[in-house]
Amino acid sequence: KAGVTQTPRYLIKTRGQQVTLSCSPISGHRSVSWYQQTPGQGLQFLFEYFSETQRNKGNFPGRFSGRQFSNSRSEMNVSTLELGDSALYLCASSLNRGLNEQYFGPGTRLTVT
Amino acid sequence: AQTVTQSQPEMSVQEAETVTLSCTYDTSESDYYLFWYKQPPSRQMILVIRQEAYKQQNATENRFSVNFQKAAKSFSLKISDSQLGDAAMYFCAYRSTTSGTYKYIFGTGTRLKVLA
Image 1: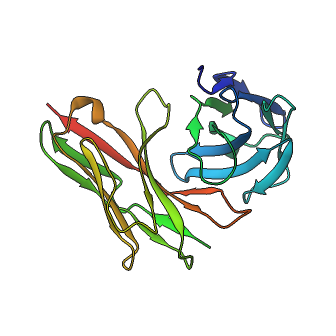
Image 2 (image 1 turned 135 degrees about the horizontal axis):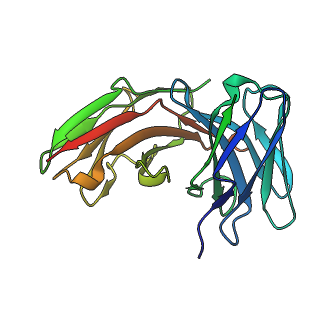
C-alpha cells in the first residue's frame, strides 16, 4: 500500500496570503489528523477528521481550518498567513478512530515571508 | 489537561552502546496509550514502540524497549546496540482512550546523535 502523501512538499507564501495543503491517507484509512511542527513548540495537534466530520480540534485560531472528503482525503487551509505560521505541517492517518496506530506523511514545509 | 515532557533536548551515544531517553507525563486518567516515535532527518515520522497503560509488562521491539513506571508517570526508551541509523529526533506521545478525545499529545523531542 502507498503511504500517506502530502502535497505540496514545500511552499513559500507571503504574509497575508492564504494556503491550502493536501493529504491523501493510506487506502482504507478513514481518520486523518493534522499537526504543526516547529522547533520551539514541537508537534502541536491541529485537528482530526473522521467520516468527513471534524472530531477534535487543537488550540489554534480560526484562521486554521480543514475538511475531509468522501474518499478520506483531507485539506487544511490557513488564511491571512502570519510569519509565525512557518512550520512543517504533518498529516497522519489511521484506520479508524481510537486505538489504531497513526501513520505520518512526509509533511509540507511552509515558509511565510 | 495532559502534558508530556522530554527534558533532554539532545543526547549522544557511541555506536553499539546503549542509551536511554526520558519522558514524563501528567494525566488524571487511568487508561491511556504511550508511544515513542522516531523522525529521521528525512522527516517521515515512524512508530518505534507503544505501551498500553493497563499492561504492567514493558513493551519491547527488537533493540528498543521501554521502562514504564505508571505511578511515577515515567516512560523512558532504551535503545540497545545503537546503530548509525538510529540517529533521529525521538518524540514521546500520549493518547487518551477516552471516547471522543483520541488526539495525541507530543513531547518536544530529543535529538539523538550516534557517534561512529
